[in-house]
View 1 (cartoon, rainbow, N blue to C red):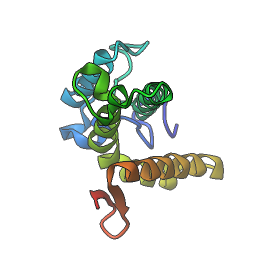
View 2 (tube, rainbow, N blue to C red):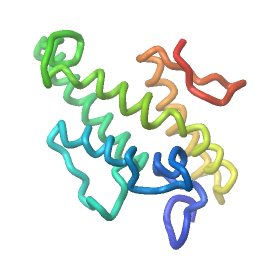
View 3 (tube, helix red, strand yellow):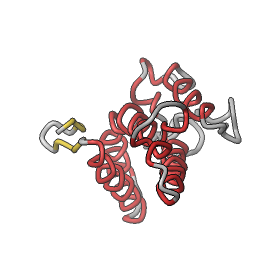
View 4 (cartoon, rainbow, N blue to C red):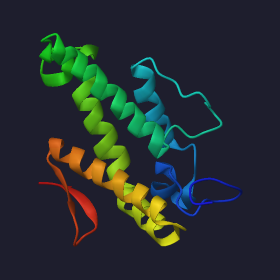
Length: 156
């Protein structure tokens, strides 16, 4: 019931739920994320049945981009990793930042609050804290930190 089930879950995991008027799913934000996947030759399995802007899918995509960056760096290709150069090959780092900063972080604190408020066990509260902490730590790579007072992520 926390993440799935009949009706609206207690802690919905879709960007569009938190950021679009009336919590509209499959919105323009969903299509923006879908386009980012497409640029890398990816498409979700349940296209048109599951919104592409699901937190798990977006973090999986960031993980995929991190893997591509690591492969490029392992062979000494900093340009392909995203550290310089032009072209599609250089998208890994900027795409990671885009997905994280533009599509995940703006609503992650609200999602974590919902998880904390509605979780029936420490396991799920821990899952929310883990995901939040992992994203907050990785965001530091891009000069973004969580402002506890304002409960938002901000550029340093």
